[in-house]
Length: 184
Image (cartoon, rainbow, N blue to C red; front, side, top):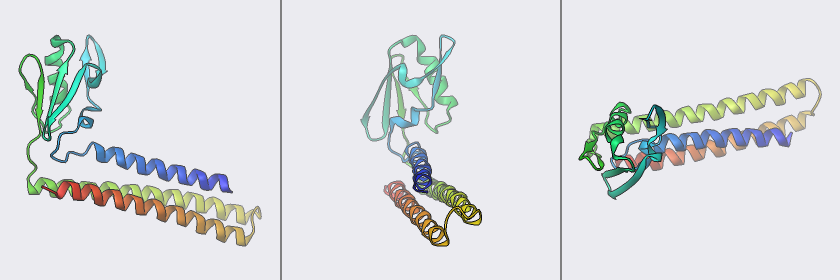
């Protein structure tokens, strides 16, 4: 029984980590190299992660500078960044690519905050679904007389405590990210 409580905890942790990864990629008006994580560039016929093709620098809060090791790839890198639809227009000067992050408008900040809340709610729903699955297993074990009624109640309480803990962590993370977005 303790094993599947650990499983439930691990699954909820993965849900939390997934939410954190989504939040890292959410644009906040500040430059973050993580916005380039999913971009792949056609490098001599092979889709290659952009981070493997050059150096990424953040010289100021709203600017990323990408300096490729092979300058012949600049146009392909620029195309890949534009295709990624980041809302950022790359500036190619023949040696480096600058990615200026525009200041977010109040309306855009509110839209991003709504997205953050929706993602948090999706993560909480995923945790509740995990809880439901494990509760069903516990009730099935009780029905098959594999555990006692006292064990059933104790295990259901423990699953609920684990769920409450992760939902609280999700709320904390989304509140921090929302505050980060709304700060000018």
